[in-house]
Amino acid sequence: MSTKTIAAAKFRNNFADTLDSVTEDDALIITRRGKKERVLVDVDMFEDLLAASNPEYLKSIKQARTEASAGNVFSMDEVFGGL
Image 1 (cartoon, helix red, strand yellow):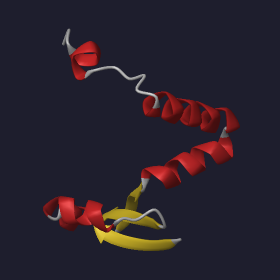
Image 2 (cartoon, helix red, strand yellow):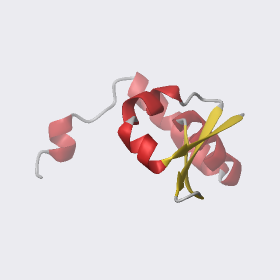
Image 3 (tube, one colour):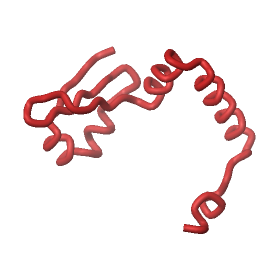
């Protein structure tokens, strides 16, 4: 895993390009006033981190992916229609 660092202002000003630059093997540390504030990681890496701390979470991710592949999903209107 590689680690990159970026200042919050630069991250904000180059948001889309910065998001595109983060791969599944990267962790992007966002700093503010020289202090490490947050870390941005690829969703697959995040799921791996969660799975390492909670095996039940990994099972739920696998089940959700299976259901989505089978077309068992909700439409935007079903989820957000009442808002």
